[in-house]
Image 1 (tube, helix red, strand yellow):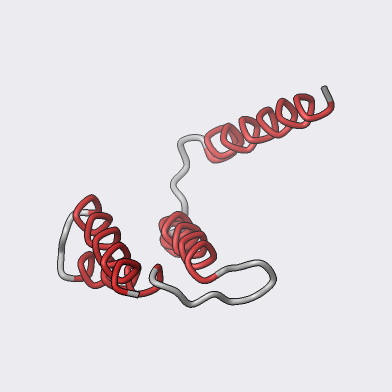
Image 2 (image 1 turned 30 degrees about the horizontal axis):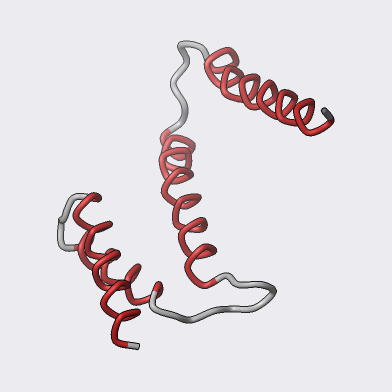
Length: 101
């Protein structure tokens, strides 16, 4: 029962934080510098998550077939491939490396 209370509280806090932006900013425009920072928050958080899941282990750094897969996906995105194609490239490279090693 305690777990569900925590889940509900975290959900409500999340909703409040998401609603706070439009409520406090309203129709005002943000300064360009703030807009550029806000635009980067999503990609930076996603990158941190991907890196953590790729090389993070149990209290240690793990370098395995996932790292070349993520690197191949990064190259694919850099070359202009859609995200779905980059994900397929990452899965293919990781799968092949796991198969041969």
